Length: 209
Image (tube, rainbow, N blue to C red; front, top):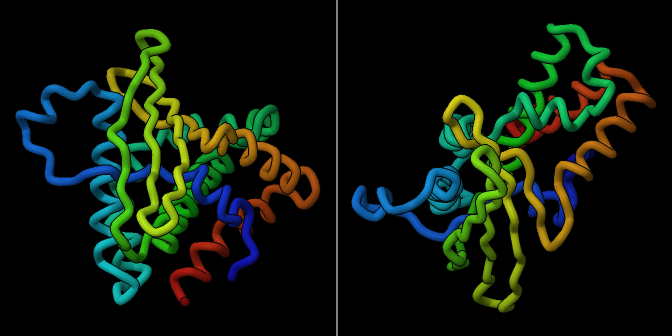
């Protein structure tokens, strides 16, 4: 549909956090650890957006997801990891521009693809602490029609008391690793402006579709 990096189905899935439930009570939520809650809050926003259906506009879905996606992911860290050593060659202004473009692209990607709900179900998250500042949260998506199962493993990191997503591994494939390979390659081939344009064009095209 659009010429964009990270657009095929496997990459989309790798970028996405899956939904397993909504409407959690305060009593239930109080028993859930902080990394799991990050996933739950994002999942609830995504399922609510899906239930708006394809009749809703891209902008409606984008606005509904923007705050939650922004809070759930640590885009500063993701941006730095995605560009590797090239990150340190960017000016402060260029870093800010890249972070914002990556965030806009990510939210737009959700808004484009999470536009309908057809009864999918998700397994509850199961978390494992790597240490006091890192945790892995796992879940799986079960599609009711095909019975297909995809596994998802989310790496979250705590900084200043706040847990945020750093990476998603889908069926053993790291979204951050794929993203780094594509973005650094594009940056080296075509330069920083082309990199921003590639990300920004996806949002622009989606908003006019």
